[in-house]
Image (cartoon, rainbow, N blue to C red; front, side):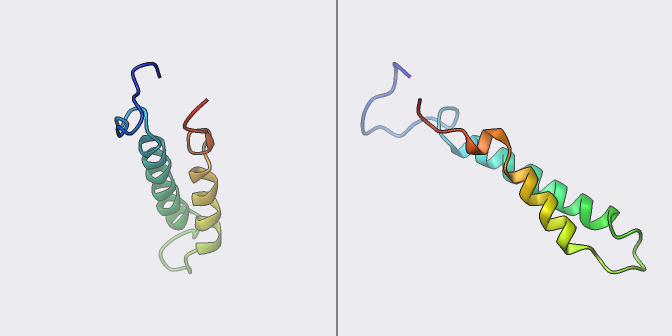
Length: 70
């Protein structure tokens, strides 16, 4: 934090973009996995309600809710 200067953009490592991309990745993976496996096979209807719930839980990881500055 001591090497940050006002007005300069932060690096990817110190910005919020990295943790949000991490959370978004796991939300998509969780959505697809729950959509496929919670249905019980391809002959049954997909469970979008469970898939969206799982994606919402996965996207609310501790990294996405952490403040960017102390």
